[in-house]
Length: 267
Image 1 (cartoon, rainbow, N blue to C red):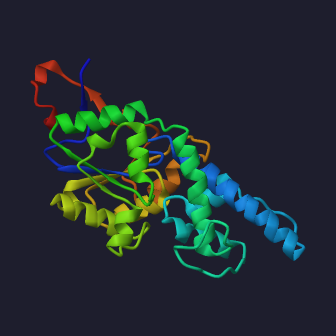
Image 2 (tube, one colour; image 1 turned 90 degrees about the vertical axis):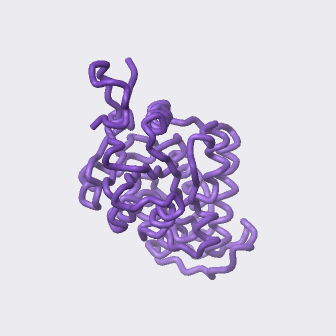
């Protein structure tokens, strides 16, 4: 049976997708990379300062301090939570440097190795994107990751999106990252779409905060049960999600042949 999007083209012109955990099964890769990097650092730091080793926890630390945020902001937030003070350094710091930027660069090395091993898109997400395009609704990726383009290419879905606003673009345009709304607003501006006529689909609280703060017409939270755990439907709603789903298949309806062929009028 053909499908149509439950997001009506009569009400919305574009859908802005987060990447990791929404389109591709890479949120778990990022969580593993953060844990590997921070645990290696924390072991050294604890030994050097005579402290017990307290590992980075995906279920709490990842979701609270780094998920959905620009990489170096995530490093700073987690270190602050542990009362660890390091030099900030610079973006050119080598991955071996124990600085905020060095740790961020080290995490990036780890996640790039994981990405190179393979990235899978969620089949239902690909179906939704294709169905939206068939209905005349434009699609864009808005991600804090500086690896968005490689991930989209590795997953074989780059051609499905009109534009990508990622961590690289945000740095070039000096845009604050999520939970500030600036990257979503910039994406809407590039598409020539009013925020009220755009939908945002996010799985991170920081991203939901950003979309809600930007005044977007519909904010959809995705509460996937990945290795990193879902954010929790209640938490996503409390931060501004209008709808929460566990999978994007829930945003597809079966087409009604009696209603004609105009999929864009589905609601």
